[in-house]
Length: 530
Image (cartoon, rainbow, N blue to C red; front, side):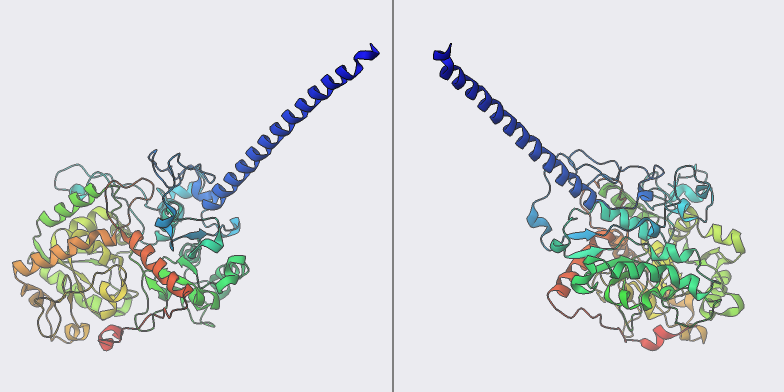
């Protein structure tokens, strides 16, 4: 037995060695698999950072094609498509890092399934369903009703202040999101300043109006991403006009708005609003959302054809409300002119002046779309500020907008979205734009210009040419449905905004001057408060 001991010892050593090698290989495989899983999970969590409330069950999950290269919106930790990601070169200079906000800054945290807030038409829970598009519009059944003009797909009762939510959902599907702030050209801040302000818009003390946004800005400026450029590579959407965020410090407690855009932090960021101050621009204006959110290029082409062919019995139309005590003389004059012309079948009018009933009427998309597709021109006098959501509605309807202030024009406000003006066929005073009419409000109020007479001078050929230019612009001013993959090729308002933003951010990082130049042309007309 002893003679064979070395042989048995060798066998034992061989068996033990094989076992150790197997264990080591198994452990290494397990370790690598665990590491890869952890990295993948971290990447997914970093790429999709929407607050949990926006992923609640009341928001339908987007129908994402199997070959979609973007992330599904069905959950916060959505899994990537099995398809290969887009080539890195396609995202060069376009990467965006999206911040993850603490739950205390989530404005939709109470919008959970079953909440009675969904039954309140004035709550933001009700208006931000369907990824911010609002309730789907169901066309009315025949009989010449207002709803006849609305197609069966792509139209929603979109609230004019819902862009923060719509834009956030689009950013979730942005193809060049990154989880590496150092690799990003820009940092998107998914905070909703307008929804926050909406809770205490008017009549609250200044502490109540300013406090929440100031707390948010303190948190934001303490983040590591802020330190690199002091926030100059950050951008945010504030879905109201610039004036609502520029309340003067020390103002009266019974006023409206807050001082969000007066804070030093927002002075460094790029802020997207519905209207900027064209004489001292700092924030950038982007279009109000319309009611039309198509999911295919075919839907857009079909609507353009419908708007082009719509019978237009009215010379002009107006939808809006008078202001108390004649605070806006130009609106009163527009009302008077339209009411007088309506008796002769020349003007279509939707009067929003009558309290709650009037407000609901002017939130009814079918009435507004039916009105604007029935008129050649749509009057756009200023309201609480120079820009009106109605101006975007008139673009969608192919109704030539008539402005009374330079600062109200799409050309002055939406510099990224409005194509370069072509003044072919304009007369010497330049009042005839390529697709709009600009009248001086002082001339109208003082009787030197008669609105109806002035618009009657345009020939059928001129009107058709202006309308055609307007209809061509429709894609540039609409926001596609962010929940689905778009069929066909089309650049919408979101695409154009992101192109402008990425160009601006690249220039900032290159040390270039991106200060916006004020437009002082025709300043007297634009500054007119009538």
